[in-house]
Length: 293
View 1 (tube, rainbow, N blue to C red):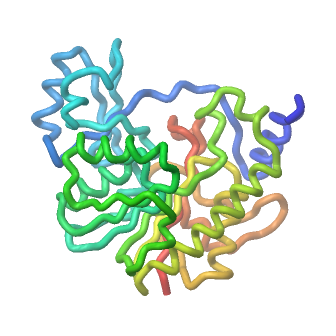
View 2: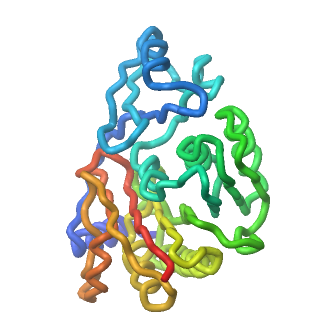
């Protein structure tokens, strides 16, 4: 993209009520309750000189300030916690998986949300985790083992090939990312790139809904700020697929945008949540909760 690339995206954000600021996102962890508890782990981490602050809108998330790598101590290697950005911890809590359920994680690697689902389920029930890219499978398998996950079957391939119906599905869709995730993000993206991602995501949504039991829950999320990958995809899903929206009940985040680039969208989309980094002090994120009708 040429030198006007950043201005193009800033104009888009202004139209949907957002802006950007170069903010520093604090490091965050999620305590892995399959192996330990907050009561047991927090004193151990504090002995290492790690300062922990509870993230109020997550069950097991903490801001973890340290002078050394949080991935270099025994407690991490033993799987007592997972290095997971705060906003990325929310989709599984919205999904609310239960020990009696069968869950599909569509795009699972490197396993942050898969291991979180397993913790919610207390290693009971069944998780089917798919990853399409072969080079990402080792990280998924390593994290499942490190975190003590025992209720998950991991597969290399397209989740659309699954031969069963699921109670709940997590679709953490591949996306264009956002400016906090990658240096020079604005200069590397074009409107065509965003539309290509959106088209892929629509196909994934259609495939996922097809695998969901009637009355089942699908959580769709991206780490993108682009409406084409978020609200506009939800609008498409409401028009084309047998789904309705449920409200994402969170204390942080903006409602989903119901007017994009001068076009009014379904007012139900306000039930979604959009995370602007300058407001939430997290990476950019979007979450929609759908129920199959």
